[in-house]
Image 1 (cartoon, protein in one colour):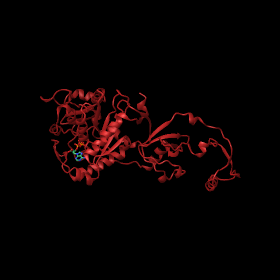
Image 2: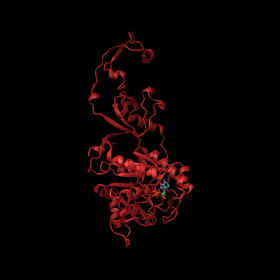
Image 3: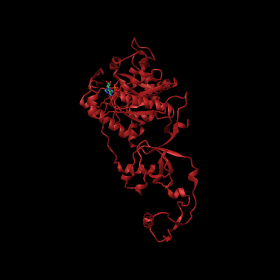
Image 4: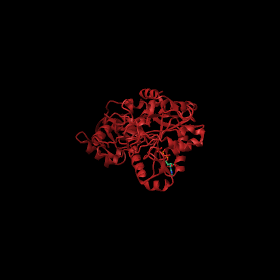
Length: 443
Ligand SMILES: Nc1ncnc2c1ncn2[C@@H]1O[C@H](COP(=O)(O)OP(=O)(O)OP(=O)(O)O)[C@@H](O)[C@H]1O
């Protein structure tokens, strides 16, 4: 093992031929017998070896760090050659790779670990292969969202594709207007309300077919490098993800109120006519349906939906506009959108907001209201048992399919605790070094 006693001694190498152990010839012995001799010997061990060809290229190779995208418990791994030599790690652990010589078992240690001894980890290829064998092709529950769009609508706007968390975007405009607050933060109330409620048959949403392929990916490792934002550089995009009603808007609202000069949200586009009290670029960017469709075609929207025959959407340029003002841009999206945002340009910091247990939801949300999916008005109503259950189930599904993309998980039990956890995480983001995909550090 890299960093183990033999490696550190510098005297014994892979490829050496072992002739004797403690003066006992081992030419005729099986490896298990030699291992047994080693296991029962005490104190210094003497080897007689015929040196093989020395390979020391590894030492000069640059350090490689990988972020683990799955949990690994060698004790439960029946294929590992030696459980004691295995490295235990969790999703999100940063591993320093010490050897990739073996196609099946790499050697690695936890980044920053003072112990130089490496442990065995499954190689990327091996992990992918055994995961594929373990997982029979799963048939995901088919959820169809009824679309009101006309047949000539842009192709990407289809709602016929299916996914485990088949989603709908519901633009609850009336509700947004009801909850309007001070004009300085006006952008906030115009954000999309994202409804992932399967009960609804009133909403329209583009659900990219590629979402199905997300599920086919086997999350193994991602090569990462350390990154620290230098002063004056654009902020990382802050992306909140979570089930409907979990409190994404509430958390965003609190951040905006806390420091409107520092935090901001995007201004959505719409193809609906401007109302008399509205101003272009304040509530929305008002564009024609024709232009909206052209922009959809040109992939200008990160998310878009249709409501009462009008399009609403969040454009990539609206994110760029906030970031170029040197502000922290807060957005909340459907999880399948994440992969489109994971670019060197946006360097998204993805926060998963998770509901607490159902008992705690009952206690904490007694007086809270959720946007109703049962009527067209988007009016708010108290949470029901069904809402709580759905919130918990959706959260589980999101975590199991997209958990490897979340850099921070916050349980929204007590609101002020969740908020201060978020605030602290965002502070650290601006001051501390983080591990990000290596490709983000090349640009
Ligand atoms: N920790 C909490 N304790 C009590 N009430 C909360 C908590 N977090 C949020 N709420 C309340 O729950 C309701 C729904 O919150 P919010 O609108 O922020 O959810 P959301 O995730 O944005 O939902 P949607 O996706 O439907 O827009 C609001 O009334 C909010 O005040």
